Amino acid sequence: LRPFTTAFYKLAFEDPHLDQFIRLHSDPHGERFATWIAEKLGGTNDWTQNRQDRPQCPFHAPGVGMIEVHDRSSAHFAAWHSPKRSPEDHGRHFGLGDCRHWMRLHFWAARHSGIFNHRGFENYYVKFIAHFVRVYERTAPDFARESARWSLDEANCAAYISRGRTMPDVHGISLAQALDALMEHERAEAGGWPYVEVGDSDQ
Image 1 (cartoon, one colour):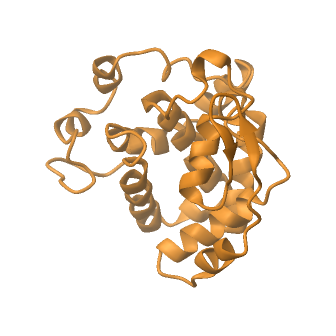
Image 2 (cartoon, helix red, strand yellow; image 1 turned 90 degrees about the vertical axis):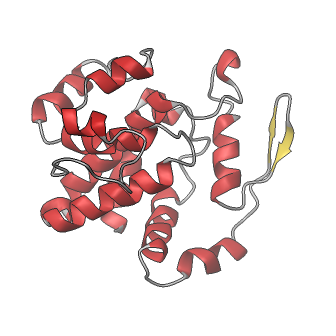
């Protein structure tokens, strides 16, 4: 998992949209993410143990005061108030565009690192991420499969890089417009997947 999560954060650091949420590149983001995934998949409890000894990393956020980052929830709160964000976006929670952007790069890193070579694990992991991303945006799980398919087409990745690592097709559009771009069975399952499948669920 570590090569995968390290590859993901390399992509995130180079991405102008995702990087605005990451205050410090020097933090061990990849290591923490790998241990969190492993623990949630039923592995060791290293993430829970390490969280108890994690440095608090306090910083001052305008309009909020001091923020102490000590776990996943407080890290995401800090991301919403990152000093890298524009003043008009400061404090705004993750939206659908943010989640789709994140999932595309996350699954790209998974594919590039080889952990998606096993199709069964890929299908399981996409559902795994869909389950957790719902916490940040309730409509985001409907787009997990599309986000995983995105990196199957190398032209998508090349176009993303040539545009300055931007994804204009996921930002600034309505939910209805976003849903229209999904496969028919994915639109039919919107709001229920990954817990309810009514069509051909193969990605």
